Image (tube, rainbow, N blue to C red; front, side):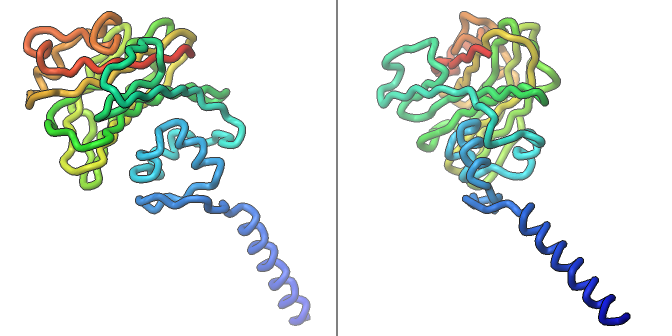
Amino acid sequence: MKKRIILFMVICFCSIIGIRNVSAKEVYYTNEKGFEFSQDEYTFFKKVYGEKLVQKYFDENLYDDYAGIDFANTEVQTKKYTTNESRQPLLRDSPYYSTPAKSIQISNVCTSIMCRISITATWLGDPTVKSYDDIGACLVGVSRLGSATTYAFSDSNSNFAAATKYDSNGYGASVELPQGNDIVILQSFNYSGHGTVYASYQHAMSTTTLSIAQKFNIDIIGYGNVFGFYDEAEDVYDDMNGVNLVV
């Protein structure tokens, strides 16, 4: 009887080990935060956020935003355009725009579970001025669901948006650039409907205040097709091209 009990326990233990091995994720890449990706996850999130954010700052919190997604079979809508010459050529309808200093990317993931836009601004070098920058979107035919989340990461610190202004046709967030290098700014929100999302990242060329950074309306003919700056803010921001995506 004892032998049968021991044999039964051994079989159960082996079965549990087998189940765990089957369900365990095969690690393809481990980033600087220690997050482990399968190959499908790495490919998916690199399309959504860009390579630098995935390799340096991606963690469980960002992963949870896409809980329940079939990473192998879910399409990421994103296009990229880059140039080594500042503001040359000016392609307003491009979903990706880069200067020698920084780039901006917009991506869209839409499934039966949710539809989500992510905007990623990546610094290719280290900005001389680290003050309050603005990042946001103008929405045409699209409705934002809930709040937009905005983070600024560096290799030594991270900041949340200091303030976010919402308008009927979009929103803009002001975030203070953190000290450190390898800065990436990420903004995401869920949405419903079909239309065009215009996204813009505007860098403060001189030190400014939060109150000045918030002096904008959402305006499709504004900076990056998003920010209609007024008063002191008009002379602060660099007027970098925006990007857009039809969703």
